[in-house]
Length: 295
Image (cartoon, rainbow, N blue to C red):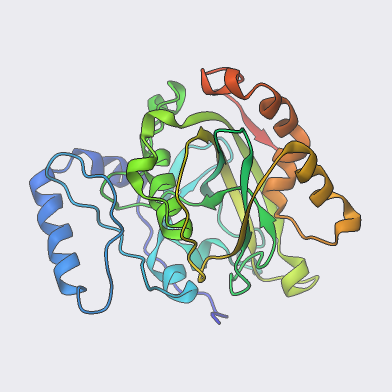
């Protein structure tokens, strides 16, 4: 288990956005070299390509510790302005030098089936933050330095397109739940709003927890028929639920644990959004200009 702060490479906001202006051929060449050099011990996630560019993220077979050091999160301020990047290990450490970790972008996907049941998951027991808790379909981070690019500019947030967040969602839905990307067209995702929250993982690490989450969380809804093949490194269980079933599971008498971000979303918005799922999927209930601070 990782227990110390690892120094991370800080990338400036201008450098993050500049990644979208690089030559596709150069990006593809670099990605190809990376894939070939690691072919003996890893495999690339089969993400959709953009033109001639290859997907760069290769997380299959990686442990939680390895991904903590490898993945570069996108750092932001409380208004969701880009400030740089740092690895996941550094971002999630709650220590005296950074008592609330490093604020970074995240996303929460809520995937519904054709009967409007919500797919929820139980996080794997080996997760470093919030292991074994139940939560929404998929929760993770867009990353810096990826192809397809996962860093959204302000105008892409303002027009609700957020292609970077959506590409990251497709990547992680495949990695965690084994959902093929072709079952998740980007056009089917609806970006609703952003949530700024901070939560130390005291249930796992005690009252002086040195691990936690401090995120600007992008909420995405999607309805799609999908096939599942959960990754045991990431997920301990999955279940489709109706609103009534979820309410029963979240009752304190159930004894189940829930992620703090999901509990906030469930208590503040989910009932309204779910009741008008058709409206949400047509573009309703969006609040694009607000970052909701619930700390």
